[in-house]
Length: 203
Image (cartoon, rainbow, N blue to C red):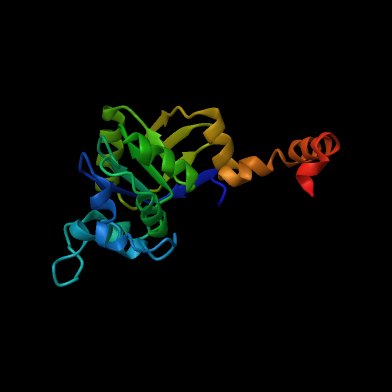
């Protein structure tokens, strides 16, 4: 998993609430178990017309946001069914950070496990960032995970909270397997002692 420390990038506004996982990645694209290749299908039903052409009114189709790595959106993002393909699709389309007033619990947890930083901010702060992203799309947003800040140049700056364990995992690029391997020395020590006590288990 790629480490997340700082991100200075364009932020795309998605003025929607209750964006469920079927909107993020519709069920017909869940046949794969690969994490790559899903980005082109992310937000499929609101991103494309029936003929497959891009919808001009969808924020991430607009030229100003084509390189966006941050998504600013509404409350209860990622609700609905608990499909891990949702954060896979978002990450594969280039989004590394999401800012919203609230998230569905499973999506929130899955985001951290896949290297995405989901930031929770009060509604008024999200609204301010959303307005700024719409009015000045060329100005990048700075996400500083170490200092837990979101900054828009000299215009606005907000602090955010994050669980220390999740912060450690993101900053060091550690998924669940990586966290386990951090304790490799202790695991080896235990196994060596256990072999002495119960050698028959290791034959």
